[in-house]
Length: 295
Length: 167
Image 1 (tube, chains in turn red, orange):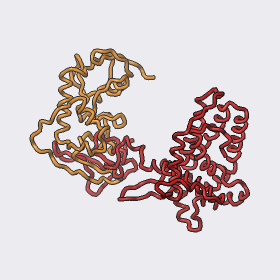
Image 2: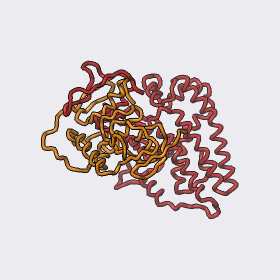
Image 3: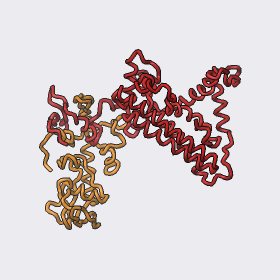
Image 4: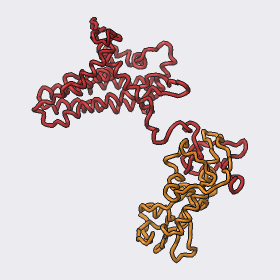
């Protein structure tokens, strides 16, 4: 506990007494920052922390808005992107004074529709709490696993750093696996709480699908661990950024040796399911959740 | 489980673990003795005098709680006028040269000096002479920046980097 390095001392007397270091001998031990915590007043400050943050705000970050901003983009991509893939134009009529904003106005219409939509809970549902809980679980699983994705390098505006990652956890892939594993509970719970044998069968089918997809997912992730040697998603992303031959967003997955050998297997089931589940869960907030809508 | 002993705090009987000092022993049952320089990991130093408590029929009648072991039958006084006056005066001494940095201070809100001022002092300053100016921004290395004006000389940081400690 005590470092026995003796860099600090008190000099002078009475009002002029002060804590200082010996000239030319700064603090140089691995535990030096502990004195910041030890100090009962604000005399010892950490250079990184000084005037930047309040202690009790440490858990709040401006980057919490990153995944929330994605709602608009994802809705737009689902509507127009899916339309583009299926060779149709998608929603293209919603406008404000003739301005369609490339279909983005449809998002506003969607939001109004979802907010005012009737929340149907069928009369035969016995456990309404679990019926409502199931989409909530899926929603939080989606958001929590989404939040660990580093979308970009640290953005510096006016000298302030904005992290493009809501939960900058060192756990990275492990966090993702731990959270996504809970999705199956939401699916099974939805099938069971619908109190309907077809919903139950659909829920089991979706659950077995999700579980069986974990095998290729695990193989893909093992290959990533072999290639990058870390579970930290930020480090993986920066490794990718420095590799010019591989600039695609899913490059970490597509370039991995295992992924190549499994090129005939379903393309990355869980991450895509994650993205597809998101709008479905969003819709199920007010539409009432049926397992068959889960891909 | 350590051996339990009985002592009196403000006339109220409490059962505490033996072998500890008064701050830790009495703190474990929820009675706080104010202290600035004492830290459980660094041991007692006794320089801040904030933890002075009265011992009824004791020799001496006033002791620093951090340096005093809890013993059976001890009668500790925390709420007498004399102790309250000592706590007020110690706070006044600590605050003579303490700058009013609280609105911009990183420690504000979890500052022991702030808490104790609200709890034990809550008075206007009586000082009429200017405060002693010291360095506000001393780089100690390793990411530690020291503000000498805010320092209350509890010597926790000094004790942390030194090996001689007397418990």
